[in-house]
Image (cartoon, rainbow, N blue to C red; front, side):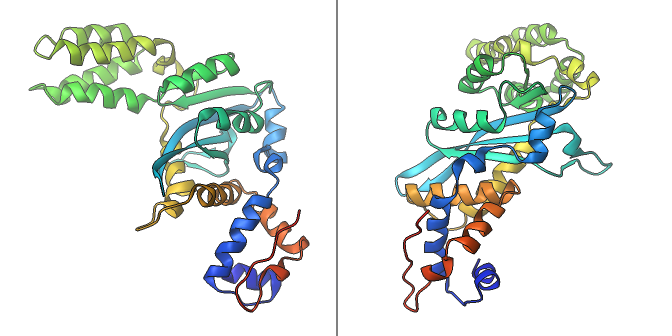
Length: 296
């Protein structure tokens, strides 16, 4: 960041000055612009033929009052997903993040991915109850998919206690991909060697998510069934910067940096550089490291 400031303003600064200016810049970013879809995404959202993915989850970050969850949302178009023989990549995504209750997060996400958009919307999530309830109420016409690998992980907790656990788990995976969800439930119930509480927990999970586990159908439609892109988003958007060794954040400092990370990873860092160029930012840096007020 000091190098960026020197490039833009032609002055040398130290890390402490840069930190304080980053805090001021983040608070000055127009949240409406930050949470609005870019022109490219907005164009796709306006097309009924577009396929748009939404993914939502929480990421735990270290703060002065302990670990706190920051909700993170990722939105991207299917046309921005590139498959290759070695790994699939998403060339462009836009994000929303908010520390604290999901009631603070959902309005910003709905601004980025408007429920009224005519595009086909697909959500791949981990099955959290609040996410399911919110999506059902707000995006009732969207396709809701329970992350396939979360289901496999849940079944894997049972397989670990079976002598032929690996083979049993592979059989359940094949059944899931063939839309044979009832067979999977029956196979879990038949594990009489395991405790009733362990089986009941998994059965309840499978039954509650039946409508989101038609994996064979989803694959035939060319849809993603895993939330791998979102697990990557946790790392690249938040954790790589905010969970470094020894770091701990005050609430305001956490919120400020989350905003900067969202702007950077969403391809909206122009909101930051424009502030530096147009708001007399050179006046924030004094010979003594004091930072002036950022007046928007």
